[in-house]
Length: 374
Image 1 (tube, rainbow, N blue to C red):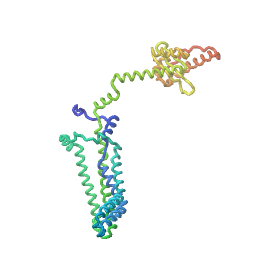
Image 2: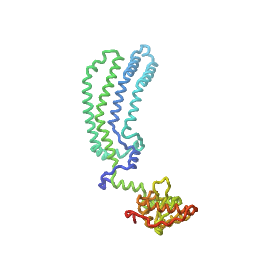
Image 3: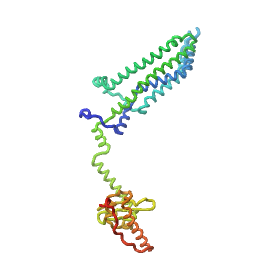
Image 4: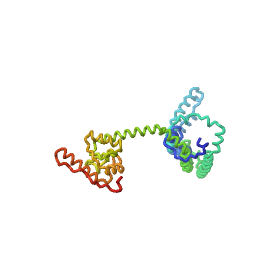
């Protein structure tokens, strides 16, 4: 649909898109990396245990080529020798097999991570379409594969010709010694040849891995419309989002009202604004625990009355705090002096009610900086 609408895939893939792609088995993979890893490990294993493998193979050959006349004409002997040879061959080759199987499993996960998907394993009838097959033959991927094949042929062929020409006399000299010695020497040379040829593939791997990562990211890119549709499906319809916002506001309102009884004073406009302040020794400056206008302001005052929280009418200060401070935020530095006067009055009033001080004078002439006035 995006291609029909003429939209380009310019947007980075979302996390949902990446997850869905991975679930389908669409991850970055490099066949060149897998091939090089198998050949390198195979060459190293041949070099490391080539001698032991040669001894095992020589022993098997020796047992099967030194049969007596009686063994040859005994109908039970061939099956016995076959079973013994197969068991010994398996024991001899098992280290190489295990190493190659492990590499075949681990190497593909080097750049895309481990993943398994039944969707990727299921047959796709669309791949049997001649039209789509013809399109794939002349697509970007097919062109890249052709370039890689030519490059591999040139690189591997060049390295192989250079190395084998230098080892020509050594290879031609095989067969002059004993079977076990020359077989071990031959496997060692074979391992070295594998290793040299495999190392030459690292040049191709160094080009292919970045290309596969780039191509995979390019294939996952989305159009602007796809991103919009995904956001719409993820976040839901406007009415659902509105309902969620309403519930969030209700929860925030209830939490705010629960903090009013913990306040030290409620500063009012007195009709339109209410701001509840809290201060103790653990705070750097007084903090706004609740604020509101009109109906919410009235509810804050009602809660304050029920919990015997002092209410003080100071309209300029109430408006300044309301417009310049968020809930659970300390008041601006410019209001420190005015709020300190209010809190001092409140604390003196409490002392008066407890019979420990004289009745304080009402607060007046609070200084509000011009940049904080509203």
